[in-house]
Length: 201
Image (cartoon, rainbow, N blue to C red; front, side, top):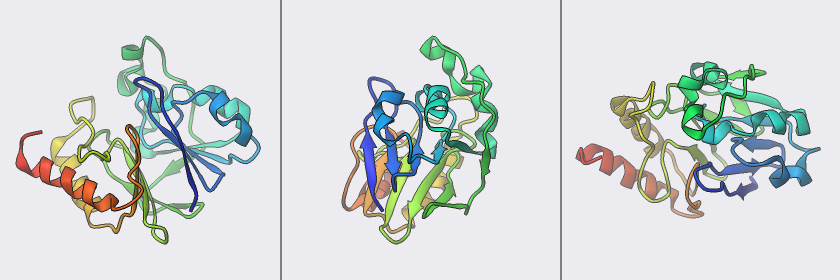
């Protein structure tokens, strides 16, 4: 599994190019992936918040890629109150997804793991062979996790999701914000799990 980091700028989320064909999240400008425009087949969104979907329209226009998102977050591509677009002084991309993802789906060697809590349709993408986890805003590489006080968020549900990913063998952890952890990713996940269980976050 090859995963290329495309860092987000400011408040906007990281994107990742996996296997050269899957662009994970769309908070980066088309110019950032122009060199790969012919190879990107899918744009997989880890969830619907605006910092992860801001450039979805232009990226689809440039690549012709199919847009993939979990069913529980699909409406967030069109509804400003769900994707927090107004906090960025903007509006929803207004796109209907091509593929509705469900837990357990496989896409280009990546397994979809439904990890609600940050949003109802948050997902992680896991490659069992390489033990790489693209985690969106479910868990970060500093032992923290995504907020659960936005519309549709739930501390209890996010805690359950952290327990689930903590059971995975994770070498590389590729979060929606911050730098990836290229080794011992499971340590960062377990730290986030412990923080959640402590009740201090």
